[in-house]
Image (cartoon, rainbow, N blue to C red):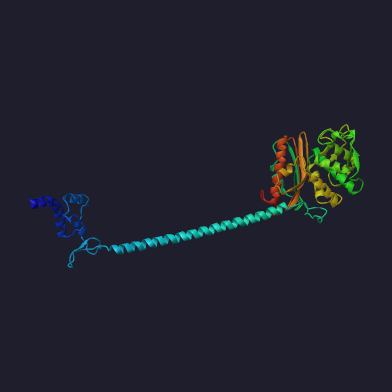
Length: 435
C-alpha cells in the first residue's frame, strides 16, 4: 500500500519531466540545473513532500529547447560533438571579475570627467572673480579721482589755452532736433577745450529775465579791478531802488550794505534791489559800453524807471550768443585779469534757488551759472567744468510752460554733456576726452 501511494504521488512529476527528457535525447539537452529543479531532493526525513514539489513546479518556467547552430558560441547550450554532450557554463568568478573591472573603469571615467568639469568651473570662477576685482579696483580709483576733481583756479593755475573756435554742424543738428514743437528756444554752446561751437537761434533777442544781472556783475567787477569801486564800500538801500520780485532787501530800506554783499545777493538770491543799487553805482551807460566792447551786440539794458522801458521785450534784452560770449570771456580769465574772472566764477558757483543746467549732469561736474525766470520766459546759462574739459552752455526759452521749460533746459544740458563725453553717463577723461 505504501508503494502504491508513493507511485501515485510521483506520477504527476514524472508526467511533467518525461516529455522534456525525450526532447533532450533527440538533439538538445535540458540544463542540469533545470532537471535538478524537478528531481525531489532527499532530506533528513526522506523525500520532500508532494506539496513542496507542487509549489516548485508551479513556479518553474517552461523550458524551450533551441537547436544548436555549429560555429555559434552560446552559453548554456549543448554541444553535440563526439566528445560528449556537455553544457557550457559561464564562470561566475570570471563574470564577476569582468563586471567589477567594467564598473571600476566606468567609475574611473566618470571621476575623470568630473575632475575636468570641476577644473574648468574653477578656472571660469577664478577668471570671473579676477575680472570683477579688477573692475572694482578700477571703479574705486576712478571714483576717487572724480571726488578729488576741482574746477581749475584761474589765479593759481597757468592761463588756460583753448583751441580756435569752429562751427560744429553735427552738434547743431542734434540741438535742432531737441527743439520743442511749442514755444521758442535759443541755444548757444561753445566747447572751450576744443573750440567746437553750435547754436540754435543764437542771435534772436529774448527777454533777459535775471540774466541781465550778468552784465552788471561783469561791469562792477571790472571797475573793482580798476580800483574805481571798493568791495567794502557801503551803499544805502533807498526807496528809489525798491522793485518787486526776487530778493531779500525789500524790507531793508535805509540800511547800508557793502558792495561785496550786494554782489553775493545779486547772484545767490537774484536780488532785484541789489541789481538796481549796483546799476546806479557803475552807471547803465557804462554797462552797455562795456558789453559792446566785448562784442555783445544784442544786449541792451535800460532804466526801468523810463517811460518806454517796458515797451516791446522790456527794459533788458539779450541773446544766447551774447551771454555765451560773456561767459567765455569770464571762464578764460579775460575779464580784465585772472583775479577778476575768478571772483565772478566763485560767485556763480554758489548755491542758487534753481539749477536746471546742473540737474541734468553727473555729480562730479562743476557748474558756474545764473538762472532767470519771468512770466513767459525761463533761462539758464553757465560754464560746465569736467575732468576732461569745460564748455559754455546757454539755454533760453520763451512761450513754454514752466514745467516744460525746466525739463527742456535739463534735457539739453544732458544731451550736450553726452555729446562732448562721447558716450552717455561716462565720466570725461575715461576712455574719451571732451571732443
